[in-house]
Image: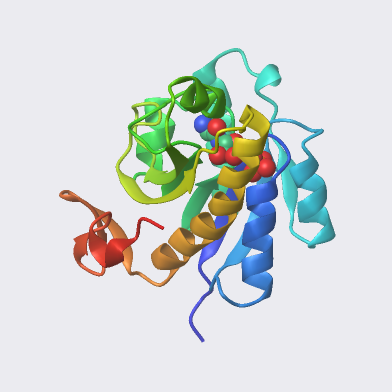
Length: 215
Ligand code: GAR
């Protein structure tokens, strides 16, 4: 039998996206195995979600390293011990060094809570409301050296409603994240999605155009 496609998921917090991955692996719709969940914070609730699902967990605290480079080297060694096919950033709130990003070129993805290239960085929901946006959403992208700047693979859109607060909008966007992110990982697991020199290709076509994948 073919070896299962191995995911290592990096988290810093609640891990609701991790939970979506756990659920999709459990129900068979994501053909992959979660080899490990690694957090830079020992108290991240996502670690508890992983333990409940019987997934190995590890903590690599950035506080224990003198520099970003040292932390990233240690983190990569701990990730690679699990032989990942894909590294999934799921609310992992650290800026990664170029060396780390290059090491995982084409097999490192992130979800960002905005319709990139709009609203890179933090507080995207409050900023979308303040800007009077009618639509907001999330983007899954390959990670490159540029913060929130790697090639976008897929997006999901939600409306911004007149009485939205940043929290109500975040909840709506996160429901979309939980559908979109495991689906994109599934495309990678089945070889449908690859990062080429010409950008991300889904079924051989530019990924964002393919299959009208803007949900
Ligand atoms: C997610 O909503 C994700 O989009 C965001 O962090 C949240 C983590 O939630 N990521 C970023 O802001 C990355 N720049 P979770 O821990 O419940 O999955």
